[in-house]
Every structure is written in C-alpha cells, then in structure tokens.
Image (cartoon, rainbow, N blue to C red; front, side):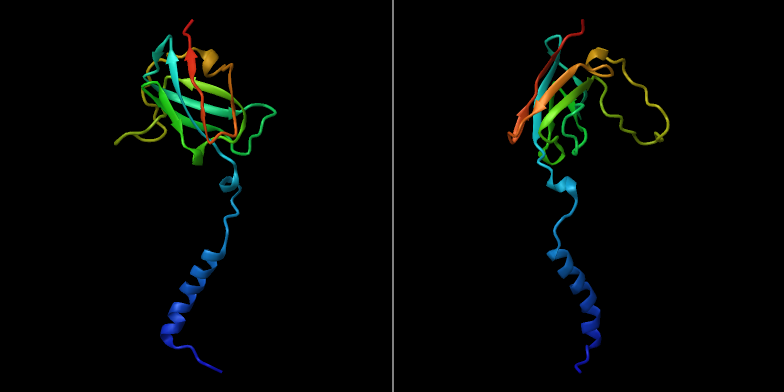
Length: 149
C-alpha cells in the first residue's frame, strides 16, 4: 500500500476542498432569479428630486421571490443594477425625499440622525398609490412625475 508523504498530506486537504468548490453549483435561489435592471428619473412638480430613495415592493398577487428592490435617488436619477433588481411582475412603488440613513463617524447606531422634512407627499411613499410593472426586458425604465398637490 503506498504511503503519503508529509508534504502530500499537507496539500491533500486544501486540494480536496478546492476540487469540491470548483465542482459545486450555486444552490442559492436568489442567484437563479430572472432579475432585471431598472433605471429612471423622479421629478417633483417638474423639477428633479434632489435626493431620496425609491422602493419597488412586490404588489399583492404578484411574483415576489426576489423581494423589494431599492435605490438612492440623486439629482432626479436612480439605477438598480440587474444583480439587485426586481424580477418581472407588478410592483408597488414608494418614493421618499429622504435618502438612506447612513451613520457617520462618531454617530452610534440607535441614535436618530436629524432628517430634513419629507418633501414628497404621503400618496407617493407611506400611502403610495404608485405601481409599475417590470417586464422581461434586460433593463426597464420607470420614470415618475410627482405632484406636491
């Protein structure tokens, strides 16, 4: 029976692990979803929304395995990359003038940062009536022209 040298034993385990990793396919269902990119513009009373956040949330009865897709809005524009995008289907859309909350140096999680007043009416965010359908196109365009009154 052949014996394995000391060096061979040291290399055997890492090589075996590398071989297994190279042969395995991803079983994560998120990797297999037919996600789509989304880009668009958001205006409020005809002017680009300076900053904010947009959320595409699966509508009731729609496909939803991908969950919500979000993006920051800057100078009226937003982009959701395909890798993080929604799957085709109907979505409820919420838009806020408040950007994603990011904590700065010296600011501890759990403390509330000072937020500017919400400029976008509730009918577009907390009580949103906006909807959009994501199609099978590789990149979808979804523009929103919001009115403050």
